[in-house]
Amino acid sequence: VQLQASGGGSVQAGGSLRLSCAVTGIMFRSYTMGWYRQAPGKQRELVSSISPGGSTDYADAVKERFTISRDNFGDTVYLQMNSLKPEDAAVYYCNTQHRGRDYWGRGTLVTVSS
Image 1 (cartoon, rainbow, N blue to C red):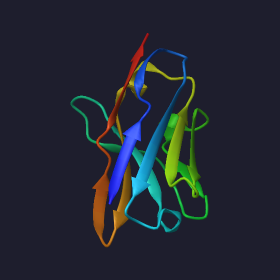
Image 2 (cartoon, helix red, strand yellow):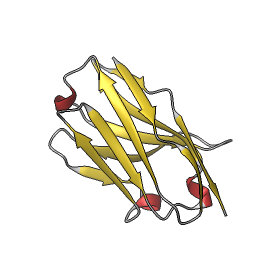
Image 3 (cartoon, rainbow, N blue to C red):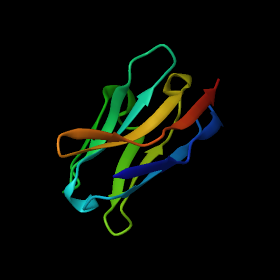
Image 4 (cartoon, rainbow, N blue to C red):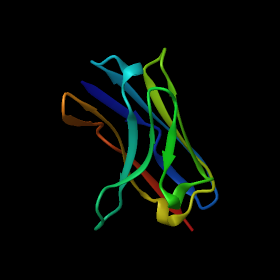
């Protein structure tokens, strides 16, 4: 199982970024996918998740600003991030669980300047 995240970068507060995570090695459409983030000195936290059927969940801090989606033909999960705030700055990771084990992408860095 491999997850390849991309799309991070540096933006000013109020800006937008779209993260992508391409997945191989599993029947993608059957798996819940998640986006996590980890800021310096903080624990990794769940940002958003999407079920195989498309049900979504968001952390309170990102509701109404971030949108998770999935392309079951392209085996890719996305995170559209709008109205970015300095506190959104972190390394973002995509995640799935397969046979009881967590799989993580390498992580993509998001920086937000005020």
